[in-house]
Length: 287
Image (cartoon, rainbow, N blue to C red; front, side):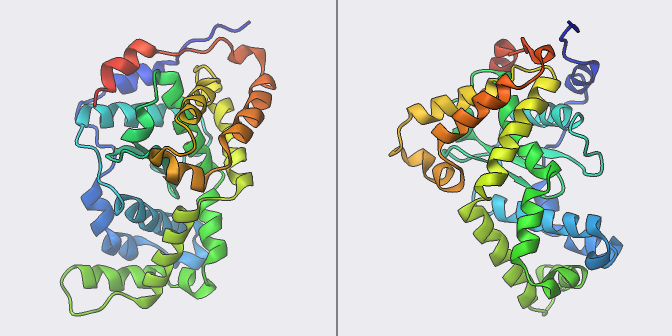
């Protein structure tokens, strides 16, 4: 059996400069002009469309709660997320990971490589393998373009075709110009907000579960990490207020655990035993 070790890449990331920025909130909220000036027409350039929609989706998520003011934790989550994403097969996006200061338990992804996890979710995490399971699930949403396809399906063709022009109008309005925000962008933002309020389809969530445990295992972590987190969330009870958003936007925990058990059992033996790294998680996840 091939020896299971955490590859050198994570060691390199851990030794990187301490000034590693997970997500630049100011940048997300003020770069529409830069993107609009450099992007090709979004309708003919899928990468440009994903970038613009990703910025808008990240804006929506960050409008609900701020980034946690914990630079050490932000750096750690960003490094771990980038290590996992390096094995996902998507090298065409700039992966960004961050922790949101929110007591509710949840995690989200957005097109173009954005991944967010709440402090409320981390409250039930006890190891790096468990965190890896959460992040790998969200990474697979981006890899499979689940949110991107859902936004595209719910948006009018004209809204998407005019994204670059909409971004320019918005940048001018937000920069103090007398222009008003393009109404098409307001509609698009409404569509994105509704998606994150109701969640993805059951099929998309179960797909990300199945692919996520494989990704975590492939990168050297215990594939049971996500299952352990879900078990602890389930133990909180269905009436726990911190789970309201999570239960509304995901399939039932019981169904996910059943499907995940089958998915883990189907993994190749080389994925076991995976690393858990409890001590390293406790060292960095202090909040």
